[in-house]
Length: 254
Image (cartoon, rainbow, N blue to C red):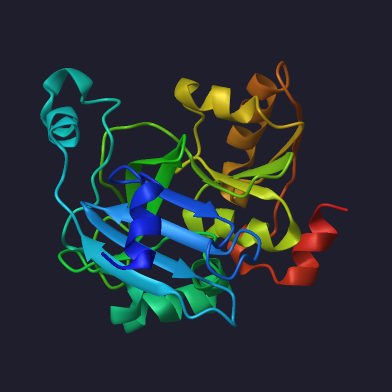
């Protein structure tokens, strides 16, 4: 067994989850990422001077299989990344879309994992909860309908970042855009606030609700519900968050 694999296995990353730590080889801070995709361990250090990266296939544990198949855990079971989700470097269309909205760096620098769904021709945004994948959202790369597709059953928002101030938006791309101005992006995957989302919202010190202009009344409904838990403010948009450039984003929240 190689030294790299020995170290990666010692981290004990369950299937369907990821972990990011200080690199045990070059020792740079928070640059070493490990993912377990259906028993396939993938690791990479994102520091420019470190060449550590690799992959190794392991078997799913009995516990993983039982948890996935148990009908009584359908709502809370771990979401297993399907085999037809592949890494985005194999999909030119996925990379072009990420670059179009200036969010490719999130994958390139290891902040987020994105996938390409070869069956449905979609860019996939995995949803994490407690460091586990619980669902995934696929964005059509062609004429596939619907434009946004929810793969699993777990009702949890798509969250990007770990800042005290969060911005509630409709879609995953808009949520990703907020990371560049040091705000947490929270995509509620529509224009209504599910009750299961509220515990996530209560973790923040400040919330902004930024839905599309045609959903302004719903934005105020959401703010009125959340204001009892968190300082919440509505921002009325002339254009969708994902279409704003860096300076426009900063100006919006000044």
